[in-house]
Length: 443
Image (cartoon, rainbow, N blue to C red; front, side, top):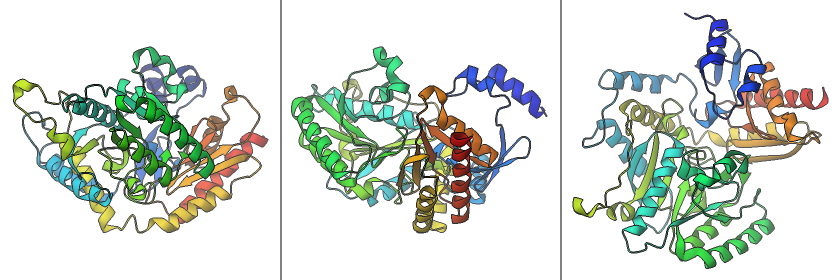
């Protein structure tokens, strides 16, 4: 077995890390290499323990090494690990698709229920296929002029070309602009302020009036724009925006990759908006944070537009090698079982209050704003140093010395722990981040 020192060198020699500047990564010295995890705690190769304050990039729901999910994966592994869904089917994918259909009935609305699931392997691919579905739907239903997509300012929907095209974070997306298709950018507030939201909706109405006939779909992250630093809007803002889109004849795609599976306090954020989308994108927490899997779920209205003789070429010509992977589906089914057996959603209110208290206890001198929706939170740092100082990054690195893992988005320190975290662990998370903030900004 390779020593920690050997692993460090191999990492520097062979691994390309996402969203990471290689020169700075190497200059920081020994990387944090995780070797094990139990509950909300991760352990590195040196035996140090860290509270997982970001759910291993917003994916882990019930904690690491949960026995129910472990056993489900082991049981499936003893049957078959993977078989294609191209031209055949598999038991776990069928059962999961049905379960998702039943769960999504919790989203109220007057449009057709979400009953048809297309499986892929990440949030980006879930959105990518949703865009293709919406575009092709209009091409096959006599509205060929609908070729554009509307999305919010500061949106983030993934890193594939289509999902980047509807993204709006210049830091991530600007360099790729020559490769992307043009969209209609809808203004979104950075907080649920009634005046700001009213102004944004006035602009949105003008944009739908000018471009509504050309828009195939409105794409939104409901309630929380996670990668933008936890920018938030109210259910009323979003319901009004959705009504505008529908009046204009556009479909509605809701990207619940980050906010789904209990993150906002309900299983799906759209339950609070009281509007059922035409297409919903799910990933991250769907498998409890165990294996890569994503789902794009649509109504029969969408699905039926792709029916016809083969020679009409109405088929959705899109697929992934590991679509409906049996192990990933088994982990997702087990995660949903844990939601039910452990009453995960019913236990959230006191944890949400604990997170609110932890955010409020951060050093006010150095925190300009706190943002929270359910179990999603952020502390926006206050300082007069330039972006090149990377203050948020330095705070996250300092937090590790206090035994917690967090990740910044610019100057926003993100709090997004597993839903299984205890109130005491949330308090510990807050204390550690508070100490790190003080160290960096006063040291």
